Length: 141
Image 1 (spheres, helix red, strand yellow):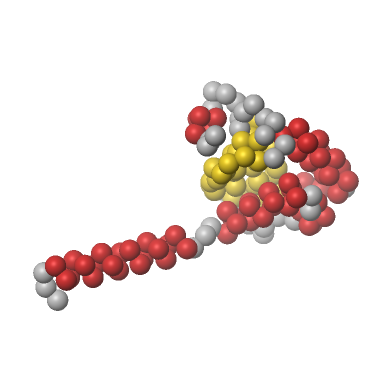
Image 2 (cartoon, rainbow, N blue to C red):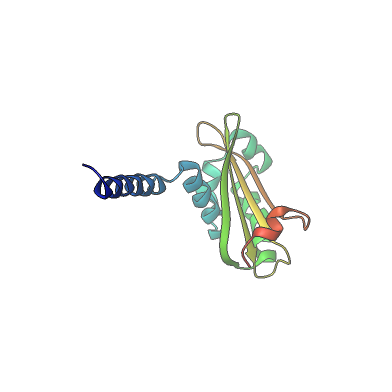
């Protein structure tokens, strides 16, 4: 194959490869989304079952997890607009971070999950993004 046809075939192959890569979702991203939906959807027993022993010491019961989340989500209201999400790796730990705006929050709120190699939740953080943070400026309004 010579000339313009060869270039067209190469572009088509590159496009197909790029689409294939896009379709492969990072399992940590999917896991973070799932845990966040359980958190805001009140599915605490399922979430608690994924907690590491250390996290279960932080929240000694499903009821205590529920109480913590209940206070937090009531203050926030409904999520507004699309979130900004990312996954990073720190040693053997995957970190899912979701930054979004909420109806009753003045600033964007970050939900962060840390998950170990076996898939257990080793950390949970829900906090307002500081106003001097780059995430505060980049979150869609």
